[in-house]
Image 1 (tube, helix red, strand yellow):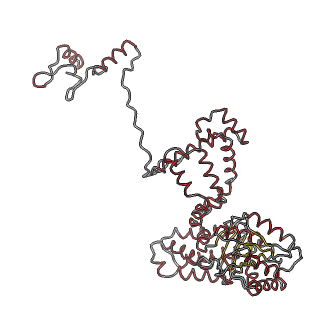
Image 2 (cartoon, helix red, strand yellow; image 1 turned 30 degrees about the vertical axis):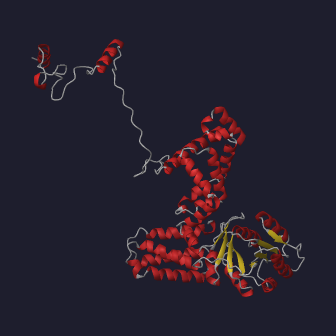
Image 3 (cartoon, one colour; image 1 turned 90 degrees about the horizontal axis):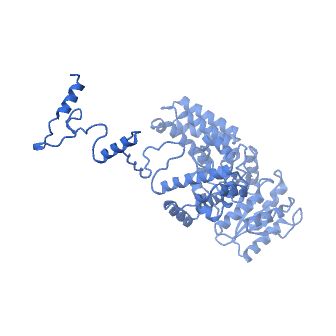
Length: 527
């Protein structure tokens, strides 16, 4: 994630230096711990958390099991990973649902942390988990907060309870209390209450939040925290813990470019787990928080499990099976290609997905230069084709390609490039579907790769190469009769072609050379 970019770079660079050492000395460990401490402090991680973290890492790194390991550097990486998981909360914490609906979730936090948008994200996520959420507009102080929640609710496709216009009008405690009755009457099993925030912690904010909590008795109180606010995150979290006593934390704006140390501090300082993380502005850029996966991302070890989960949500299993059959039977068309690209877009940001791969930090420049609008351009080109052209790209002659380029707002060169890439991709997928290893363009054959069957070399046609037509016809006739062009054929064991044109004598031997042949031999020997 962008928020942990600098921290990730420094930690991975520090740990990479250890891999060049076969044996770790106390000085190596101390130097590594010192660099880790600097990286965490520069990332605005709380000082007490940094001291505890580095002390534990140093103690474990100097233990006997590390010194006796076959790869001590890898052991240290594992220790850092495990301690990162610990300060991020350890195990994943799931929402607690009421035994008797509705489940009440109350959102608290400072103004600008993203509570209203997160309410819509949470409601959409709950709906995807087969719940029927109800959003409650209890932020009646901030201008247009009620209208914003209504817009977000409409985008998420969930119901919104907003009896008061807001903008300083109405009693938020009564609105929250009435929402409980409305949820029961309309059979909503989850109620998400969006409360007011302030630019800073004050007594009025805490009293109002405390009154709403007493009136609704929520099952979950989630503290919405901006991951970009730095060291102040710890003080704010402690103030809300004393005033409202939240049960979990939600991190927002993890796609920002700030240092993000708040995320590594709040769980350790407050003792409350991080439950969700908001990774972008879109309503679907919201996910449950997994401490182990986040630690792997920070150390550039990848997050394959989250990537798989996103793919499972975006891709239909039955459709994927049909596409696999088409690829195996060489029936994969541009229509199927377009459908696959549209499903890929539904997974979210391609940069985000590529960033979940192990070692993605090494491709940072390529990822930053990657233009996600390229998929939209490809869609425009394919959608400018007729159904027949999509099913059979061989129909695309020059005039058709010019028409497609004009219809999609692209150039003929870009249309040609798409068709060429599609052909290469179809061949590679066909090779994989048949159990082979495809040859990647620009690279040689992979060792041990089993590609398709080798093409049979054509038999070289034998014949005379003479420029004289009469001589060429005579030599071709001699070849057809079994003779050798340019002289008699020499049988095994004979020398200088002698006996080549003779017939077998008695007993299967060769006939003796003729006088003309003997004369030719003497002439050759200079006699």
